[in-house]
Each structure stands twice: as structure tokens, then as C-alpha cells.
Length: 338
Image (cartoon, rainbow, N blue to C red; front, top):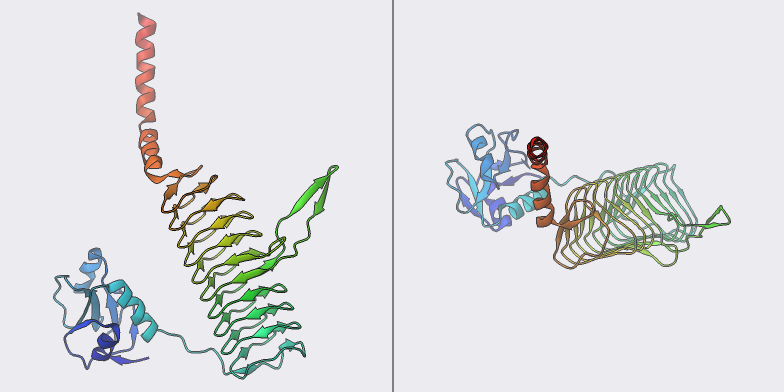
């Protein structure tokens, strides 16, 4: 989509400095932006690129001192950048509405006229499909599933039976939703599988990254609240309940029956053991291992996870261990001489 710079500034609710008739085709990184593109500076360390960038214009903070021909000044440049991305860089729909001839749909399935069903898709019985959905190639939708209006499933997604997706969900390639939880009992030395009879429920505006696995509940649902985003390769075990607007980055793992509150942020490769409660507005640093309940508004790190400030103190002390070791050995030698 192409917009005049004045139109873009107005849409962003920001202040224009320069020629409003300049046409902008796309938002791009400042290092590689072309002469018909706009970029942004939200961090002063990128200010040096303003001297060499080919960008036609820049989105910058209101108070940033910069000499550049065309500027959009915003009190919240990150938010302005996000809105500019939505306006300029939105990808077009991948195909026209309709069902590909190679797709296999159960006769009970009603496909809205606005839906797009790609090649090789399988949709089993009693599936409910919302308006304006996109289901791409080779995706499998099990019986009794619901896919809410405006949702987009990329190629090779698998939804096991009775998985429920809200509106405007995005499911990236090779994600598996509703597979059996890892539930087993040991009797007389034999491993017995516990039936997994629940399902998975995703709220509205949930995004699931590539190669994620979200297990169904053993009894009752595994649920993910509105607006929550999962990065690639995240594992959510059976009966986990995740609140609204959470961020779970790559390779996070959450064990069974754990509750996460709203707005929880988990760094890459962090994890939570089962049957715990993590409160609202909690931050868990990269590779943090949570082994106990975490109260609201807490930041933790390390393994086992502890208050982040305590972890930093411990790390500072650990760095001094070689020096302390030398001091102790020297004192031992002196004592032995005496």
C-alpha cells in the first residue's frame, strides 16, 4: 500500500515536518530502507544511520534532535511504527475465497463464502468455520473443532478433535493443537496411559508460532487467553491455563496444570514445573526455571528461579570465586608455615 507522507502522519496521529506529498510504499529498517520507504528511530543508538540511510522519511520521538528532510514526530514512536507497519506492510490475502478441489471436507461442514480452503486440507465432521478464515495447504482439522472469524492457519497445522479457536487467531506452520497430554500411571511396574479427554481453547487474537505443541487437558481444557502470543517451539502441557496478553518466547515449556496470570512474559528456554501459580505481570528471564509459585508483579531469573536482584548478587559473587580461591590457598600456605 502506498500513502503520501501527510496522509501517513495524520493516520498515526503524529506531527509532520517536511513535504507531505512524498509517497511512501513501505516501512523498512533504517540501514536498508529505499528512497520510497520510511524508517524509524526509537533508540538514540540508531541515530548514526540517519546520515547514510536512503529512506525518504523517518519516524522519530518528539524531542529527538535530528537534521533530516522529512520527519514524522510522535510521542510514542514505537506505537507509531507498529501502526505504520499495519498500514504499509500488510500482506494481501494469499488466494481468492473458495475451496481447492483437492481439499477433503466432511459433508456436515458448512464453508462460508468468504473462507479460503487450500490444497490438501482435511476438515472432519461437525467443524464450525467462521467468516474470512484462511486454511492453507495440508492442514488437518479434527472433528468438532471451531475456527473463529478471521483466523489464519498456515500450512501443515494440525488441530485435534474439539479444539476451539477464537476470532482472529494466527496458527503458524507445523503447530499441533490438542495432542494428548503426557499422562501416565505406573502400576506394578507397568506404564498405563491416562485417557486425555479434555480439549484446547484459544481466545481471540491468539498467535501460535511454528512447531508449537499444545496438549489437550486430561479432564477439562487447556486454555490460552485473549491476545496471548507464543513464539516458535513452545510446549504447553495438559490443563495449563494461560491468561490474557502474555508473551512466551522460543522454547518455553510449561508443565501440566500450571496457571499463568495475565501479561506474563517468559524469556527463551524458560520453564515452569507443574501445578504452580504464576501471578499477573510476572517476568521470567531467559532460561529461568520456576519451581515455586510466583506472586504478582515479580521478576525472577536463574535456576531455581529467584528474585532477579538476588540472582544478580549471586552472579556478582560467583565472578569473584577464582580470586577468593587464590586468597584462601595463600592463607592456607601461610598457616601451614606457621
